[in-house]
Length: 114
Image 1: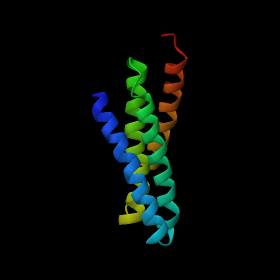
Image 2: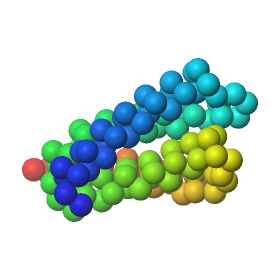
Image 3: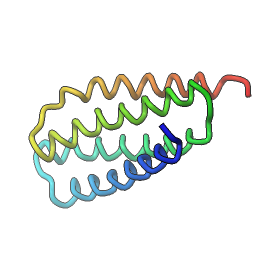
Image 4: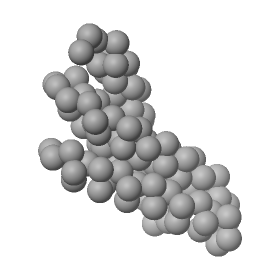
């Protein structure tokens, strides 16, 4: 995936995080009020991570970006879908595992010699 597209998606994650946080603070109730701030925090943090890792090249950097993209979509999307539309959260654990793996791959990439 092109780094420019990844950067645009990362910015969308951050913007969506603000919208989810605002909705959670002003309109959500019940379980949605608990799930949306978590989804917002993860979307924002991983959007920033994607922007920071945009400058890295190589297979490990590509793998970590792919993990952040997919993990954020599955984890945050699952929580937001449950909060807003009553959908199940079955994909959240898979997304969380992808995010953890992406951070480990990013650490390996950042430790390698340039």
